[in-house]
Image (cartoon, rainbow over all chains, first blue to last red; front, side, top):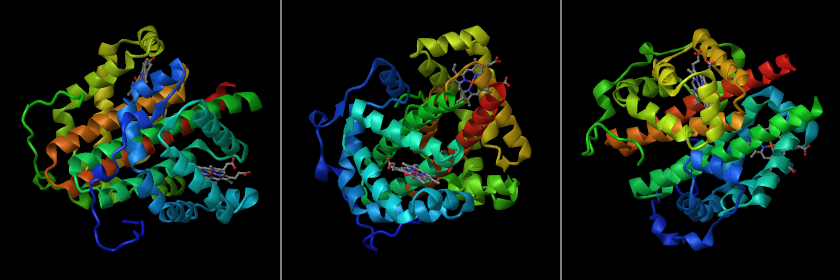
Length: 187
Length: 187
Ligand code: HEM
Ligand code: HEM
């Protein structure tokens, strides 16, 4: 396990403790995007599970983000890109906000637009899609470890893990489409 | 659960039954690719877990592949691409082989080259990366459900799920790099 948890003991809890209802989450997207969500079987039930994770993510956000940038330092090219355009300290702030918003329980035009804008930023700094994908995997693994640490019930844990893997996959779809469009535009 | 399992009852088993050793798996890649694997924390232990899944995947390959193409039919554009260039029946044969090879326990130049060639095939038929990503997610979910169905031990199940999510992420990296290179070449 790479993440440092706040407590050393396993502190498994039931996700029942912060049960969210379907009325508290929103999916409002175009027909095309709905097909994307249908293909990955992402529905309101998943979004409920994602939003239910929000307190846990907030509690562990420092470790997630620390792990994220520590990991990127394995690759000197990525380190150079970061230092040329920004700094780890500044990026930690924006990444924290970004990850927390992912667990807001809202997928709508604004959510999508924000993600596309961020993807375009990465096209401009010359980040190759493969490194982007690596970063998503690292993020997924951090979140899986947190879910496993805190969720008592095996089925609930797995359902939450699947929901997170789907919302991250959806973000990857948005990123890749932005890369395609932006690369066409630049050329 | 979308997959039809061979037996209706839960038939959980311990992965100990087909324990593989690190000598039976191979990672032989360039320095650059090794960095990609390092960033997603994919090591020989993961490959051992992946190879340990091979019998289970073989046993359930029909359901995985059926689910894969049934899912694509939600999108009439994708259905049209398939029928223009091939047929579901023919693709089922190649996809079966492809998935089974993923669990061979070997990541080397040949493994990578084959995957890049297949990715290039998809660039040529005009498949947008976002649909490719959706298909990977569907595949991941099918395999997660199989692991959950068969693995008794929670920790072993989760370790196997993480290993599979990593090897699928690695394949996505290869695919996206091929898309980038191939698109540059075509333009
Ligand atoms: C899961 C993958 C990633 C996510 C979610 C993510 C998220 C973000 C966010 C939210 C921003 C702020 C954008 C803004 O200010 O509007 C940003 C900027 C940035 N990211 Fe990432 N990032 C990811 C991967 C990477 C990787 C792998 C690198 C490696 C070089 C990287 C380097 C940067 C840099 C240099 C900026 C600043 C760009 C600028 O302001 O000119 N990111 N990222
Ligand atoms: C996880 C994602 C996918 C995998 C692993 C995969 C795998 C494969 C493989 C192994 C082949 C055979 C290549 C060869 O004969 O050399 C193939 C061909 C093909 N795939 Fe996929 N595929 C994926 C996604 C898709 C999707 C989403 C579509 C939707 C249209 C698609 C449509 C096709 C077509 C039409 C061909 C035949 C191309 C031709 O022979 O001209 N694939 N795919």
